[in-house]
Length: 64
Image 1: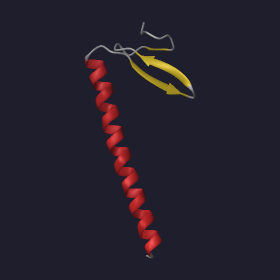
Image 2 (image 1 turned 180 degrees about the vertical axis):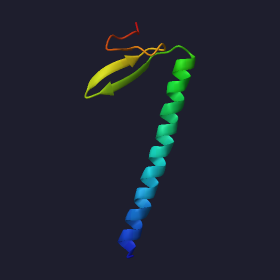
Image 3 (image 1 turned 120 degrees about the vertical axis):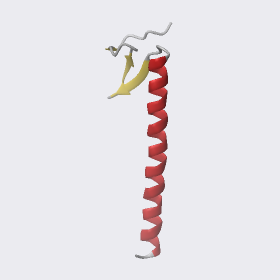
Image 4 (image 1 turned 135 degrees about the vertical axis):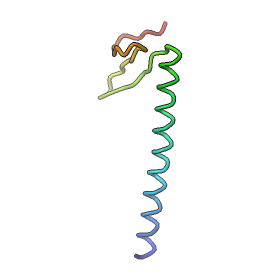
């Protein structure tokens, strides 16, 4: 392996590590929202959705 291949491998490892941290944080936030009866907001294909604590998914904002 040459130096550039090693640097590229290290970059991929760092990226996967950062993604793992982000995924854990998102999962924790979703669980915390569910516990506190707070809707979770997400977007898919540029459309905003709200997942209610009971599991219902709606495009109508529950926030005032």
